[in-house]
Image (cartoon, rainbow, N blue to C red; front, side, top):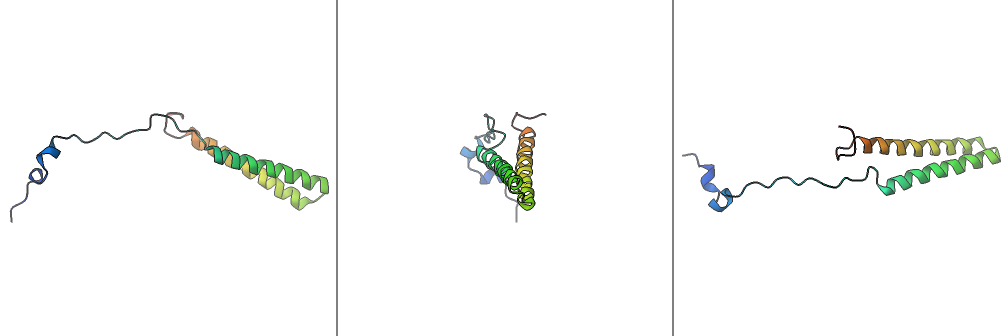
Length: 94
């Protein structure tokens, strides 16, 4: 059985075409999406309110829960900022 020539199986009109160059995004994406930023800031604010409410009512459990929410929201925000700094869309270090 003879081997088929791969160029023969391609129509001649397709041979003349060059492969398309990949399109790259020309505009930089925002480092963080607005929804994530709002969500993280809301969690931080909720934590501050809960923590203060725990202080006022002398409820240590509520105070600890508020501290955990506040720190968690702040940490998530910091992670999002770090991810944005290292993205390869021109906004971060190379």
